[in-house]
Length: 141
Image (cartoon, rainbow, N blue to C red; front, side):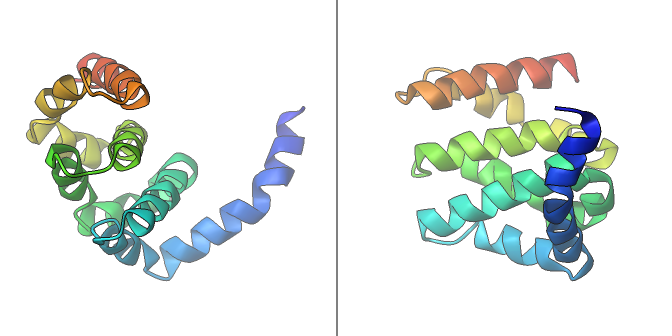
């Protein structure tokens, strides 16, 4: 598949993401990530992950203003967070490392310590993602 073909396929997603960012939707997604309902938390994290992966530059100040990094730290530190919440939080941490201000926020919190503990998580997928996230945090520190 050519790069142009891939861009054509993804164009509708970029449009949706830009609309979410431009209309102030990020703060609502971050709030949704703190919901008491795991399904809502997970859907918010997946949406934020797509935004960070595809439109990080335009979303950067909105993610920072919504205190995303602090929310992710809280979700990863909470023993009651479901495995999929921990997994998607780590994926999102890796995605926001491409932003200088968000990267600095990640460095200012004890993410490496929290993620290192998750390497021994009972859920194998969480443990594997923790290893990958730890590597990324270490390399980019």
